[in-house]
Length: 168
Image (cartoon, rainbow, N blue to C red; front, side, top):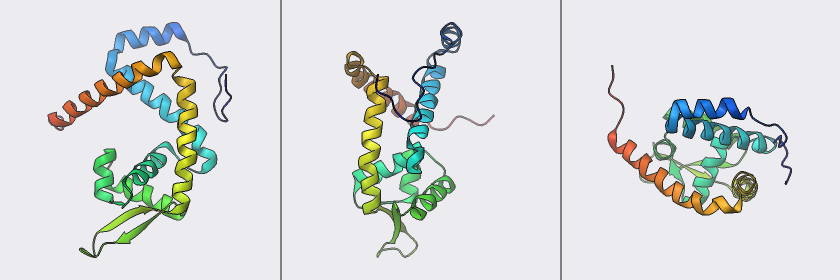
């Protein structure tokens, strides 16, 4: 097994307790638990770069878009509050991974654009995520993952279409 800094491959989880919890609490709990564990794993591995999983997700998104995004567009895409995005962009800007660019059409609107340093970080982030994912998802599961991602995207779209939960 490949060793990755920040990941303790020898620690076994309490299988019986986890199985009982997963069965009682169901699909939604399991999805949330897997998401948190995956995020925590990536946070530990990205820490030496001075990045979090959320920050690396933003950098990956900006690298894919190319021309930059407004903070509102980022908040919508990542399902985060605007103030959370402002803080995240502030921290990435302080590390020279991104910069804010005033738009010519609206002086109030600033686009967040990835820098060359940010693009270099994205290459490392992609390698790191690929390494982690290859440890988590063995080859026999990778095909299943593609269809699972498709199902999760459909569920996500349905939940978004349903709108926010009614206030009690």
